[in-house]
Length: 200
Image (cartoon, helix red, strand yellow):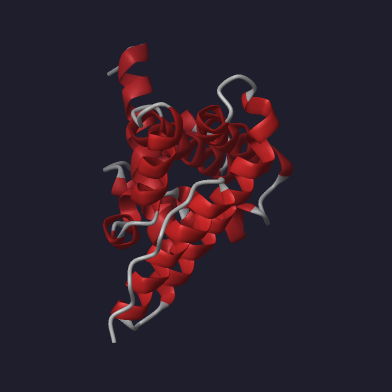
């Protein structure tokens, strides 16, 4: 039975979405093609109908995850400084930290992406800059490109803070780290924010 173009595209998207969740949970090296295809409800044999290699799927999944993050979080945040604070507080929230499958691919995969092939890293760069430009546009609406490096630095700080908060076994310390991260990111972005008082 032959399937139409729409069915093939829908199947490809299902693989990409399932892979995005699995990669963030088990890492790129820890996720084999057979597992990625099984998650999508398909056999290994169908893989090469949709992708030329595992790198091709990784690049597609990471791009899809970042585009989703931009569309659901960054693009829907309020304009200006209020939107910046919304983005920072979402990113450094306990809910985001505890939702690895649905979370930011940068925080989950950045160290592995750095070891990927040039084309995969280029796809990551192009996709993450869409997110960064959304942040930069709230910093300097008249000239977003002038704030790109600052926005990228804040994003890197937030991703590292989220990673460390996920790694800590002390939940209270992990929560305090997130709140301090909010303060640090907003300060870097030129916004004043008083950190919550640390309980005795």
